[in-house]
Image (cartoon, rainbow, N blue to C red; front, side, top):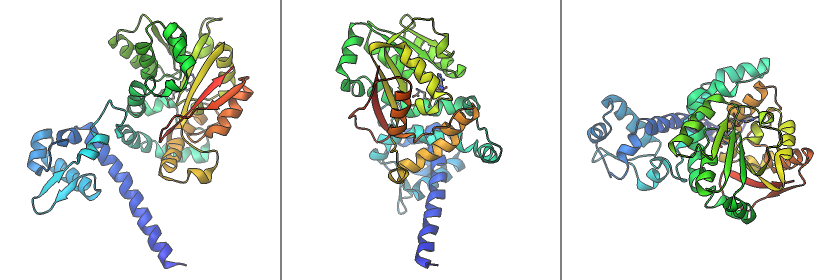
Length: 351
Ligand SMILES: C[S@@+](CC[C@H](N)C(=O)[O-])C[C@H]1O[C@@H](n2cnc3c(N)ncnc32)[C@H](O)[C@@H]1O
């Protein structure tokens, strides 16, 4: 055996375990408001952070120690202060923006909480149903995606499809399949007041939240959210735009659902698909984002599809599989769009 390789792998193991623990500490830092309390405050003593956050002193102290050890905070041993740099606050104390990275840290406890049950599913089959992730799972998905839907969907992503935005401006019918808590649907409805939208999701808790969000934004006259299968929509109700954001790989019966979506799309309509950015080849996914996505897959995307009797396409389904699925569903074209993103890829699928 090569001792250097053992040493390198030991480092790798400690790094990964440190990352897992840091993910938990970051989750706590966002959830308790510690990062927000330290943002733009410069170097702070433990007492100052306790005072600013109004949290339990010993917990705060140990959290500061852990975040300093992981280099999320800068520790000054002479002054005994902790600083949360502006560049880090840009990512972690920026909820609601499109550069907020805190959502993925909310995923860590939600996903690892089901790890024992997922391990059992490796033996017995089945998996963890979407509802079993509870409100924390729904909230984590929302935190990951909301900033993009509110700040990029209309202002950047859909600019790649000028014929779609022209139709929406004139007045069109939109369907958001797998809409979750509805922020993509609501961003579209806000931007295009002449258009009507339906958001569909099988998860009742997500739809309940989406309906609250629609009411808060005063959009219930043009947006309806429904916790029922697509087939329950009135026969003949068709759409000019279908959005499928971060959900095709989750479907339990993708072939049937995509075929039904094909029938619901008007002849010159477009289905805009957003999927996690992954390659068709494993060797191209062997990097930190790919490793994160395979974890998301085993502990969420794949397992919830398998639990529902689905194929478990997984988070890293890739463009080739998507193209094959939509082609089998009867769509004529699947064009990957040139939209920049670290974590998403985009497709225009047409009848
Ligand atoms: C990863 S979440 C994405 C939610 C939302 N689009 C977003 O981007 O935040 C996938 C969603 O697809 C929904 N879903 C899965 N299968 C579905 C189906 N057959 N019909 C409608 N929604 C479905 C799930 O309930 C879940 O809310």
